[in-house]
Image (cartoon, rainbow, N blue to C red; front, side, top):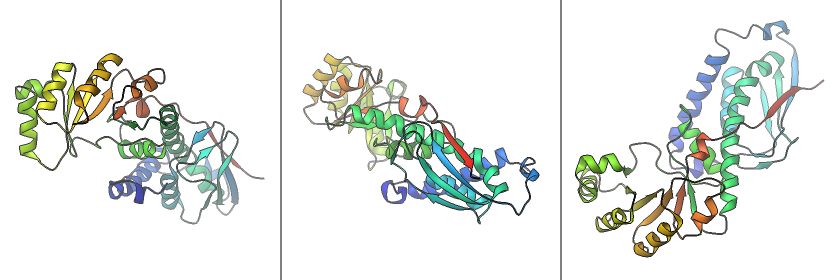
Length: 286
């Protein structure tokens, strides 16, 4: 997957990749890798990176940038691309260069790959469960600190879709916003006044609030913790007027049943916050 073609925020992502690589090297290497100094500076090495888990690869650009900053003479040969499915035991990256550089960059590179690949893999599992329904799977802002754009990109690699990126690119009017504004209609009206070109989403907790959001002409309505019967009734009442997003109590055991109610999309924070790192390994070759 090429993020420069796939995502509307690719320019910001390019900046984030550069910043992330710099942060990771500063965090792990600091003033210098003292253990790597045991190895002669001129010693050349080759290395292979394999996955011990079935997974969806994500993080190629981050690793490229990390080694570019660490030692631009290191050569990386990718045997798979972001979004590709890997099998346990598969080699997906070969590296050549100074042995010191390969070992110094190892952990920072694997940390990124194991986390972003985990997000992409987790998303793919969810997407596959509803692949034949036409329902879109959305992420949320429940991302790991400092990895917002990276995890949003990983979700896309896994076949999911991005919800709003932050607090600036779409309105999401929740319970406290509604209370502070004096009601759903007032909140939606004020949102239209502030930025008429941005989508307005309203979170509702009952069918009565759904009716209010429809009357206020919300673009998207989030059905928060609705039961299956309530979701079906919401779809009936909506009749295609607004985009309906189901949220809350979404996991692998409930996802398919929610999709079958006829909602347009389902959002889940689990895609980015409930991930288990992929087991990766780098080994120098003899």
